[in-house]
Length: 153
Image (cartoon, rainbow, N blue to C red; front, side):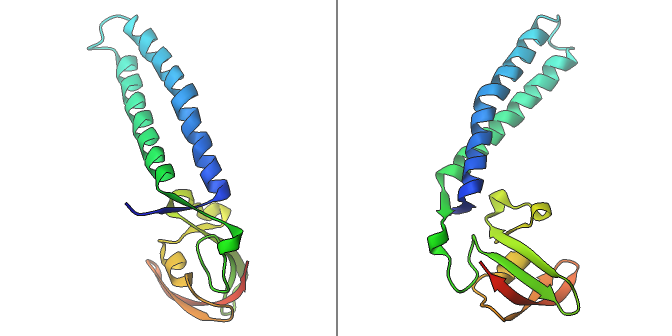
């Protein structure tokens, strides 16, 4: 089994989501199922079918989170090096462009809108193990481009 890289914050958020799904969501879905069962013919009951689908999705997400957390490797500040690693916050700049800051995280907590880029994405892969001042070619789906690594935290 491969490790899933997570920051401490990411690990905590996934634990909270898992707890929410196991308790609150399971209870809400069970209530919906019970109410739908009392609503008559289950074969023709759309509410019952919808609740069963939601239950299946919820249980699938619980299983997924359990696997992620079981194989998680939490990245700590002590593990950061002079080169970019999972957990590093980097500032890059495309020639003539503006400076952009990203945190390299595992795929499970990737969220580009929040500046969290997966170590498995083209940008994340290209940045791993690079050092301050390096020029890095990124092979992105929209085309290749080059950035300079300005800062590593």
